[in-house]
Image (tube, rainbow, N blue to C red; front, top):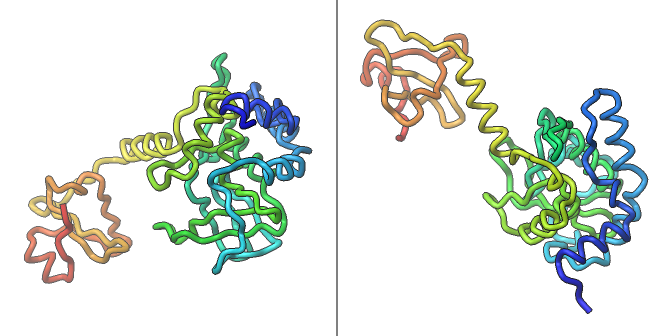
Amino acid sequence: MRLGKIPYVAVLWAALGLGFALIPPKTAQAVGERTAIEAQTGGQAAKARQFASNAPQKAAQKSSQPGSIYSKNFRVVDGDTLVLGEVRIRLFGIDAPELSQRCSDMQGTSWDCGTWSKAVLDRLAHPGLSCAPKDTDRYGRTVAVCYDPKGVDVNAAMVAAGAAYAYVKYAKDYIETEQDARAGGIGLWRAAVIPPAQYRADKRATQLASKPVQSPPEGCAIKGNISKSGKLYHLPGGRWYEGTRISLSSGERWFCSEDDAQAAGWRRAQG
């Protein structure tokens, strides 16, 4: 008989003995916190992979796909990024807390959820990992679904462990898995957590606000910016004008007119 969603999650973690292994730490002391993270995520990875390989996962697929990347050498960077051989991998369809991100539990205690998420991926990943590429992101990373040697979807396992969100902006593969983790109060869902995307946006806004306002030369307010798209100039009032910073040392410059900008090889930015 098929178990309902909430009972299924409860039985899953009880069978794995992970009722406490994947619960975020409740202490914010620097040394004690790291020790707690290691203790909570350690010793159960092999058992988890064995159970998960037989569990009903909608998103799980075997790794024998054309173009898959294989290597026994890997390094976990954070909760959704790893280096497999020489390839930097961004796990498809999930979004984990940033390494610098801290969260609060229900008692208001701050804990290092970014480091905890990375530790969970460290335990779930395994030598012999393989990754099936889906795309390449704007940072040049290979976006992929990764599998352990038994074919278990590591991306799905991170979401099931409550160590990452389903990244619905880019994929819908792990929405149901997140709903199960959320309903079971697993991992991050036991605490008050700012979604990683919101955390990144808030951090960028804070950094931008802290930068001194740039004053253009009198009468020359057009910003000549150099980006991946080439040399673009931004007019005052344009969509990207306020967020564009001019670095004179990098060859960027101010222009007094559009004619000057175009004559120097810049083209007008869209928006």
